[in-house]
Picture (tube, helix red, strand yellow):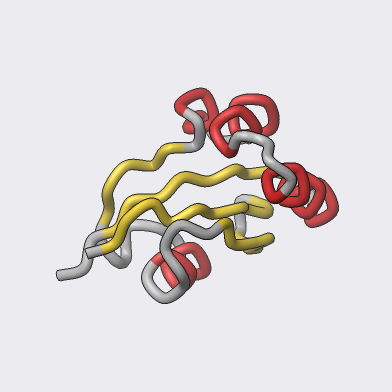
Length: 92
């Protein structure tokens, strides 16, 4: 079975998500941006969600984590919780 590790930043608006993504693309630390902006408790851990299997996260999140490029920041990804930036740190 596939496993992946990822970190994310959860915010309330698409615009805020896009602005944070621009800052990361311009050299800001993903972990620091998570600590400053994420609405998820994982933000204090730099957005780290640890390792998980398909089906443990909401569908929209899983689709990105188990299909898209590892090591890249993806998003905004809309879920019932808000807007996410997702960085897939590993997948096996």
